[in-house]
Length: 401
Image (cartoon, rainbow, N blue to C red; front, top):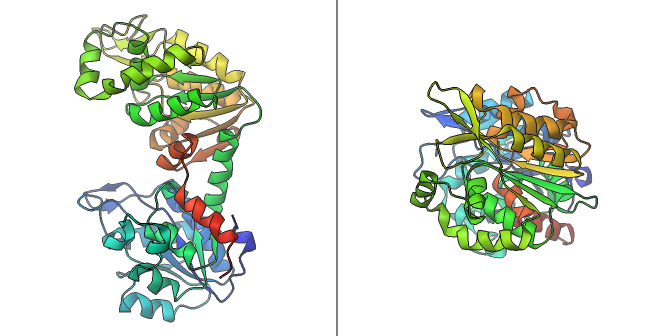
């Protein structure tokens, strides 16, 4: 796909799709690393005298964080150190008037694209290109830049419609994210290690299954809920924890998990000890997960996982391995992250909790191959799925407009 290096943008109106979907508390949008990433491409285009028109989304219809983008313009202005003017319209007369009078090097942020039903139509890109939203804005621009890698696993109007009509390019964050994730997905040097944890097992299971069945990873180190499910699949007794897992609906994957472990047991590693709170609330360790609720992998498991990581050549870290926010249960996550930091492997990690853990344990970011702001797109790509927004950029690179 083409990047900003291929774009001659001076004096041109360029539509830029970014992902600045932010945490929102009581109606207030909070700053996040996504604003800094988006600002890099926006600032570069403005400095190169493009007329920059930004598209972005926030939340989903019906959710508390489904708000206009006025606050986002202020947060983006702060990161770009340039004024980003907010327009409370997307493709109506107000938006078109502001685009028409836009000067070289100036920046507009249009309204939340998800306020308009056409954004989420479930139709092919060529039909999305014919929507009033895309066709109207595309007629006012000369190029499209997609810098929203974290939304690349979705085929929505603002992501895949514009490349049908305009020469399209990857922004700096998009190009960087895709290159890093491709490096892990197609690692030539082995071993490759996936560290899978957290409280939501669905994505972990999808990754586990794809990586094991397609020989994409040499070791799959499990923890959290997916680790507990793997233990049950191995025939271990988890006592009351199994009841909780059943109530959550997580045990529905057990038949497939049992088959996976029977076939790929050497690759799939499960915890051999656990940490829990004793009667005084102090960390204690046990070899069984059938007793008190566990909050972390035990020290033996953490050290065994660290040894595997130290021998690896590529590592993907998905989610902390325990309740690292609590001092008595930070050990597992700290040992694993320190092992990644000190390894010679190319490492990929991301997600809000992971970023917090990196900060808490003072991990040297320069020793991490790539820290991603994306979640679903990374999981989708590493699970062997196509990314519609990337496909659209690659298709555009071969197209005559």
